[in-house]
Length: 336
Ligand SMILES: O=C(O)CCC(=O)C(=O)O
Ligand SMILES: [Fe+2]
Image 1 (cartoon, rainbow, N blue to C red):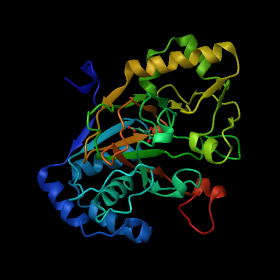
Image 2 (spheres, rainbow, N blue to C red; image 1 turned 135 degrees about the horizontal axis):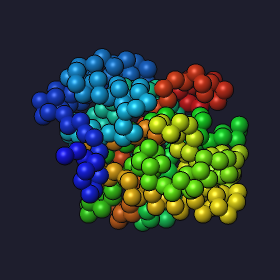
Image 3 (tube, protein in one colour; image 1 turned 45 degrees about the horizontal axis):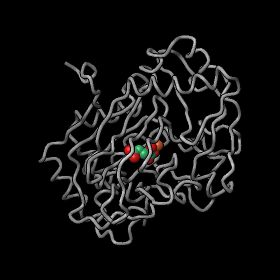
Image 4 (cartoon, protein in one colour; image 1 turned 60 degrees about the vertical axis):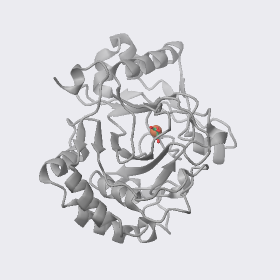
């Protein structure tokens, strides 16, 4: 029986053996904060992760490069930091973190899929994002939220060219440092191939037409646009060949240009729920997400803002930095 036969769809998984976990823990524990000299750290991590057993190494590389591989994969039993400070309550990096096992494990894995990239309007351009519940954002459709279901979306980026689904990351990786105490938080992934098979053909046809305007990410609307919607050019939600569709939905709202287009959006969310794979991320687990092959979502969960809340770290990856060079920042070649 495969994961697809079970009622609750799980993810394809790579589970490291305890021996591999411990060997990687010993390699990563002395490593410095990778943000201090990122390209040197990435070179060091390239060498370290080249020592993964060949089977999982090839699976990870194939996940990053091929059109026909899965859209999501879980890597479990990664090494963790020997001590974890309080979860930061503001979504900023913790000033009390003394080892950088999580950051290095995250970047080492991420680098097998693409180039880590930062965006000026997302987490201050940082390459490692701390994703924690923030009280002020508890009910928003952003990564600060906790009390609400974070709708099926992909991570998009505001762009002057009017498209938010072109310069955005090809992949994101979510590494769990601390699970929520009640273990309520569930992360979902709906593969566009499954979604297209499930949708009513008439609804799919509407979703393939450029009848939708994506709202910019909540962080951009909040920090740059003073709370006002900033809509993209009209785009299709689903594009590309039927064997390998690409899908784009902004968490922070999509506006349909016709009543039929507006009506297709709840149908899409419902199809995503029907086909979604799901996981409760635990410390030492990383979820690798193809940001073009499918949409992700997260359940609501309890946050207390007491230092013990759920804590993820996240990277954004591009297969190449070349095609987004028009956004480049002269002072930092990885920030766009
Ligand atoms: O918290 C999660 O599990 C997913 C959050 C999310 O959508 C993101 O960080 O992009
Ligand atoms: Fe997201």
